[in-house]
Image (tube, rainbow, N blue to C red):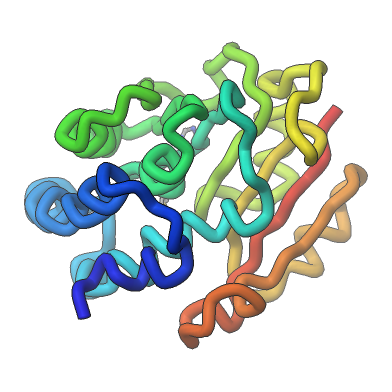
Length: 210
Ligand SMILES: C[S@@+](CC[C@H](N)C(=O)[O-])C[C@H]1O[C@@H](n2cnc3c(N)ncnc32)[C@H](O)[C@@H]1O
């Protein structure tokens, strides 16, 4: 089985372009990761399951409408922003990270697969003043800290089925982090969508911000 097949199993309606873009990620990330570490070297063999499919878990919680604007806070080498940008070509993704060489990897990968809906910026998210419908994030900081930073970036006007807010990918014990949050929170277990053991404890956390 081709490694990219795992993506098609869970997202069977991909166009040929999307299939080619997902397939191209293997060579691109193995090349760039050997120069600039964006994925643990031990884990690069699990690129499709642990990084790409995991990023796409957000698409099991929300189907972004065309024209939606999304920021990926602490994107590193482009997760979850790049897999989501392939899946939602009519949605724009702004990738932000405070480490310049990681932003370079994300930019190079996006350019190589000709993603037209991706922009990237090297800065701390605290400095980013643009407004978005949603902020997505994986493995960056505790939920209360994320909320403090992104409150200034969430547009007031709603244009999706879910009210605007923060959507992050997290694993493990979260009750403690969630308890201190005053906003409405929705937790989705990825094991309900993806059968691989890796997803047993993985969750998508949506926080309504307005
Ligand atoms: C563990 S990495 C995760 C990268 C990527 N989201 C992923 O899942 O592969 C955390 C990233 O968040 C970035 N980061 C941490 N605090 C940040 C901030 N305040 N603004 C922008 N980026 C930040 C770091 O530079 C790092 O690249």
